[in-house]
Image 1 (cartoon, helix red, strand yellow):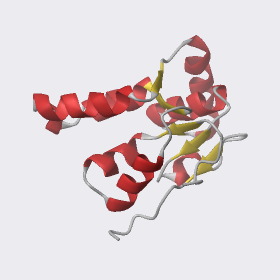
Image 2 (cartoon, rainbow, N blue to C red):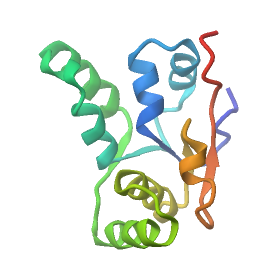
Image 3 (cartoon, rainbow, N blue to C red):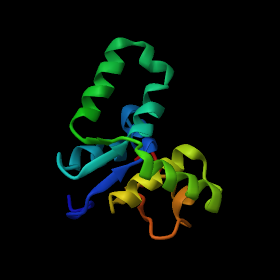
Image 4 (cartoon, rainbow, N blue to C red):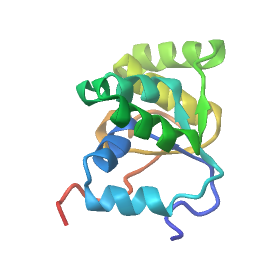
Length: 135
C-alpha cells in the first residue's frame, strides 16, 4: 500500500512474468495495485503472449483476464517515433524502448526489475517494486 502513490504507472513485462510464475513479492505488488492508473504497453502483452505456456488456452485466458483490469496503451505513431529515438540515442532494445516511450508519453512512472535497461533514459521515472529474492 502506498508503493505507487497516486501517480499513473506503467508495468514492464518482467514484473508480470514474476507474478505469473508465483514469485511472492510480485504477487504482493500486483495485488496491491489499484484498478485505475495502471498502464501497460501493447508490446508487453505481445511479450507475455509469446511465452510457450500460452499454448494452454486456460493459461492464456488467465493472462488476458489479468491484463483486462488495466489499460493497454497501443503503439501509436508518437510512441513509435519516440521509441526509435530511444533506441538510437541509448542503445536500448526495441521492446524496452517502446515500454519507455509509453511511460514518457503518458508521464508515468515505469515499474520494472530491469532498472539497468532504463535508468539512463532522460526524463524517464523508473522504480523497482521489489527485490528478486525468493522471500
